[in-house]
Length: 142
Ligand SMILES: [Zn+2]
Image (tube, rainbow, N blue to C red):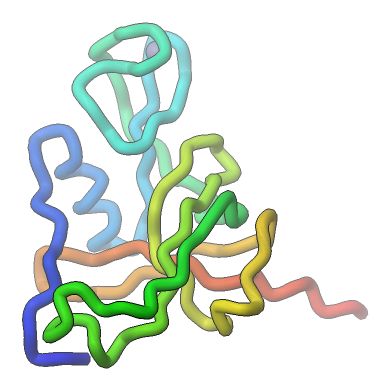
């Protein structure tokens, strides 16, 4: 890890519960209490029906790779030069929404579309914990 600060998310009124969930190592999704749709990223209104009322549900943490890029050129260089190559993927969660996150625990060349992944959490600072995904281990045959 470099000594230079990584750019980090800045929670706002809509996303603060999501980031608090990450700090507790729970992946929370905003759920519309009108139509039941789950949403990411969290916003002030349901994108499906426009309702403003919602609660939060904990996601399973499971999903699959929808798409991804492999970053070879560190920008900014001082921050990421020790981290390249790294993977930024769009993960489709089992609950439906897609979110962008790093994939860890696997060579970039081994990633494939539809690959099953499971969330884990990286405590970056006292305030910010980032979700990231790791290939799901297949069940051990018995
Ligand atoms: Zn709704």
